[in-house]
Length: 209
Image (tube, rainbow, N blue to C red; front, side, top):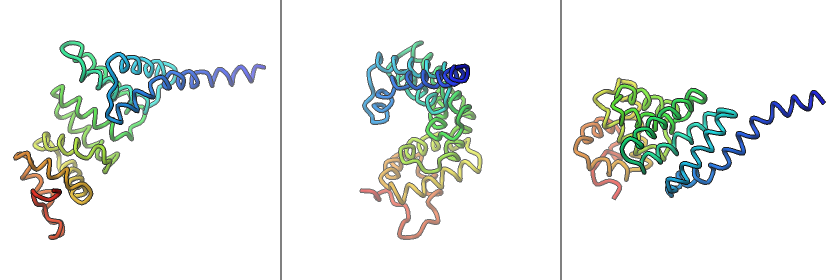
């Protein structure tokens, strides 16, 4: 009896955390699919993940909570938006403390830090996003655009990581490079990144049409 009680006591927190997280599953899936739920649904899902974390903190679920908080912030304004952005950043930091190998979470943290004006922190988070997942198709364009905005602050290692991502994107997703090339500020960096590729793959603004 005592052994059974001990087993139940150990299992109960994980069970309760899983039940709570299940209530947020549909909202998380919808956001990933590009069909963002309304603010009340996002709030309910965020609260469900907070309850899950209160039982058993897990990095992936905390990252999902950060994602939902960010989506809520995008639907809000003024002080409410500021509070949600701060909460999203805290959730991402919690997620990465628990599970550091989450390139999407690092990228969101970089964007949140950039928005807050912490550009050095944004560069550090972008570097870790690139190191923990060098090529993640869903992150290709946002990471390149973020890196270009921060290019004056990038260290040599992060610059090379970003150039490597650009070269790989040029082979696999040239349409993204063409879209980015429409920004005049990106031209010099693109040419530097793609200098040295095989002649038949050399960068041209019209490639990807």
